[in-house]
Amino acid sequence: MSAVLYGTTGRILRVDLSKGKVWEEELDEAVLRKYVGGTAMGVKYLYDEVDPKTKWSDPENRIYIGAGLLGGTRVAGAGSISVVTKGAMTNGVASTQANGFFGAFLKFSGFDGILIQGTAPDWKYLYVHDGVAELEDAHHLVGQDTWEIE
Image 1 (cartoon, rainbow, N blue to C red):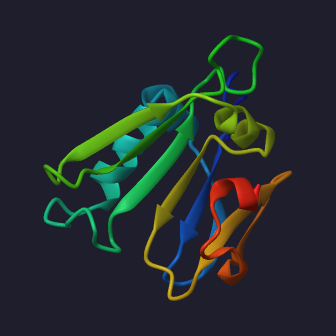
Image 2: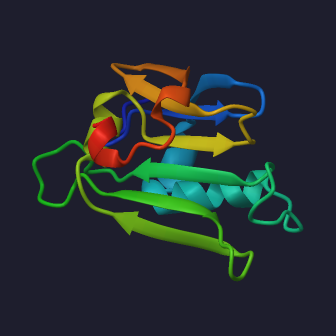
Image 3: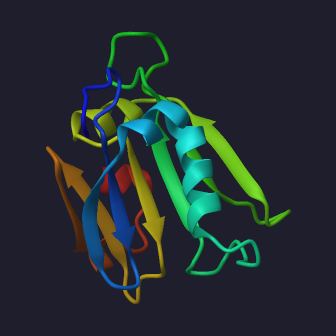
């Protein structure tokens, strides 16, 4: 990234479940200025990388989870995230927003968003902490609820 843009980390995390690969992608300043926030960035990736004929359940679909510009600040509600993918009912672009701390923790880990594609052959979870991301075996978590896992 050529210049510091306040409110962004300038990086997203890409995850290909089919290949078991995780890597970082640096975002261009022009892209960051044009597509502000999680929803806009998610729509950009969907239109750029997913064929319109792709069904919502196909491994070629993408799921983008992104934080907004205020993620990680002390502004109320700034920990929210946007999730963008193809919707099951219309097979068109669908987005939703959620509040909580995920957006802030995503920024603290050094990423503006996570772009997921593919289908994992085995149970996996994505571990992201302090700028490091790994796909880990999740067989020991199968059958547990969120209270047990936390």
